[in-house]
Image (cartoon, rainbow over all chains, first blue to last red; front, side):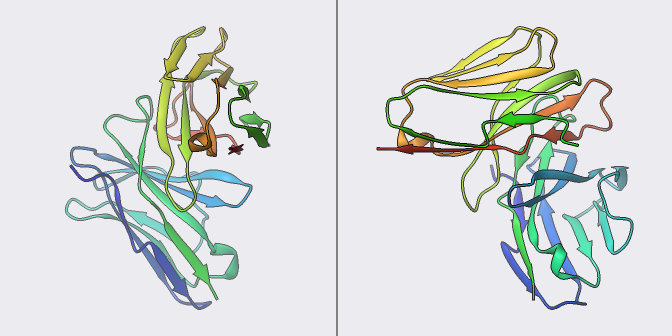
Length: 114
Length: 113
């Protein structure tokens, strides 16, 4: 009964490259959330998806960031033309039914832009 | 503007002491959750409180949801070094905008033996 799986755990990209972060939710969970965590800033909501649908992307920067959760396969958070300010820990979480019952988080992907 | 204010931000105590962490807001939440996060890992859900005035106990941890569902507290009795970590409160808005949680900035707890 695997939990939320995120990969890679660590990702180093040069400025201008693309970063792809993957997240497989817990078995049976159809709600996926992406959060970004910076030191001393807490967890900031980015996007909420269900299968093949973006439900709420109010926390996503308008440019360079996109997310998907296809019918088959993991959810992907894609950052194009990365900049130093994108360096952060990115966490994926999943839930059975919205947020009321709480999330199960993955271990995160630590993105470093050099 | 931080919707959920946690205090204190940092807390360093000796093993055996008691402590309380507060989570306050001017907004009403339909539920409030507490998570604990260790370095290099994702947050782990400790508890969810839903009803105003609700109190839940988890061994030495006591969680309370304010009557007006705007605030919450976490009390740890006889803290142990294993309690060290980042404690996060998170609220689900009363008009739930698609299930997202709003997180406080966290309380970094260090329990020294």
